[in-house]
Amino acid sequence: MLASITLREHEELCSTSLDLVGCVKSWFEISDKSDFSYSKSWNPVKVRHIETGENRTVFETKVMKGSLFVKSSYFVGVDWIVPGKLKIEVQPKVEEGKRVDYIKLLSEGLLNPEAEENADDLYTIDWDATPVPCSSENGNFKLFLAILFVGLMKKLLKKGLRRAYYPKEAVLSHKIKGKIAFSKLQRNIPSKVALSLTCKFDEFGFDSPENRLLKEALKLSKRIIQNCKSCSDSGPFLISEIGRQLKFFELVTTLSNLKPVKILKPNPFFKDYGTCLRIANELLFFQSLDRPMDSSANLVPPYWINMPKLFELFVLKELRSRIHYPHWVKYHFCSNYQELDYFGTSQYEEIPFFVADAKYKPHYITSSIEKEDIRQVAGYARFSSVYENLGLSGENKLIPCLIIYTNQSCPEKLELDKISCCKGYEQIYKVGIALPTL
Image (cartoon, rainbow, N blue to C red; front, side, top):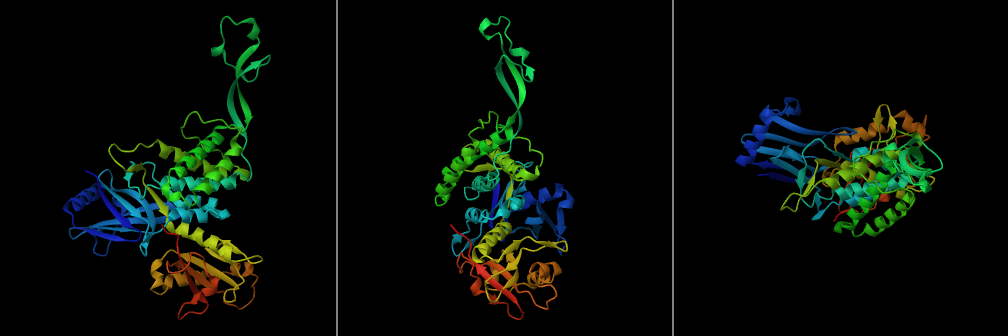
C-alpha cells in the first residue's frame, strides 16, 4: 500500500509510525551511502538535492530514536522518499489562513524580460524516476508549465518564427525535385498523369517539426487553462493571448506524431527556441501519462518548483513598476564571481541608489534580519564595479542596502516609501511585501 507524507514549505514532521520508520530504515540500508550526510549524533540523514542553477536541498529524511523525521525546504512539489512505497508532497505555505498562489506568482514574474534566462532555475523534473500519484492541490504543475510556456512564447514570437529545412513529400508535375519515391510509382501509369511523380525533398520554410511541436503545445496549453477552475481570473486573458500567438502558425500544419522533437542547435538570434521546445516536450509528456484506475490523483514525474526564485522575479517586477525613468534596476549583475539580486537608482529619498536582496523568509516579520543576510548584501554594496555602474567611483559613500522579504500583513505592492531601518545598522533597510494568495 502506498503511504504519503504531506508537508508545507519549511516544515518538519516527526512520526513514530512503526510502518513508516521500518520502511525508511530498510531503504536506508540499501541506499547509496554518498546520498547521506550525518547529524551531530551520527544519525544518517538522507538529503534530496536538485540542480537549479546551484545545488539545493529540497527535503531531508532521518530516523532517530525510533522516530522518522522529514524536513521540507522552500520548494513545492512531489517526490519519492522510498520509491513505490512512500511519497512526499510539499504544498505552498499558508499565510493567515490563505495558501500562497504560485501560479499568480509565476504570471507576475513572467512580465520580466529576464524570465526566459531563468526558466531553467524555476523548476526541475526527474524524468528517470517512476511517476508519483499526486493530489489535486499539487496537480496544478501542468498549469504551471502551460502558463510558463505561453509567457516565454510571447517573447519568442516578437522575432517571428524560425524557418528551417524539413523533409517534404509531394506529387510534382513536369519536374523532378529531390529524390523520386519509386515505391509509389504505379506499373501502368495513365497517360494523363505520366508526367506526375512523387518526390521527396527538403523544403525551407515555417512548417518544420519544431514549429509543429510549438503549435501543438500552444493548443494543449489552451485546453489546460480552459479546464482549470483556479485560473478563472487570468484565464480569459491567457486564452486571448494564445489565440493571438496561434495566428503566427497559420502556415504550420498539425503535428502527426506526438513524440519528443529533438532540440535545435543553438542560434544566437533565436535563443528562446531551445527553452520553449523543452517545455513543449514536457507538456506533451505530461499529457501522455495516464490517471491511475479508481483514483482522483494525477500521475506526475517527481518535480520541484523553486519558490525563492519565483519570489525573486515577482520582486523584480514590483521594483520596476515602482521605479520610474530615468531611474533603473539591474537584475543578477555578476561581479567578483558573485551574483547580486538587484541594484540601481530610484526617486526615493532614503535610497537614491541601492543594492537589494530578496529573501523568501516570512519569519522576518517577527524576528530581526539574520547577520549572514546583512553581511551578504553589505558585501555586494562594496564591489567597485557596483560603484562604477552607479556613477559613484571615487566617492566615499555608503550604498544603502535593502532586504525585501515576505509579509502578508503588507500590501501586494512594494512600498519603497515605507522602508524601515534595521536596528543597529547604518544604511541597512528592510521592507515586506505580500504574496498572492488563493
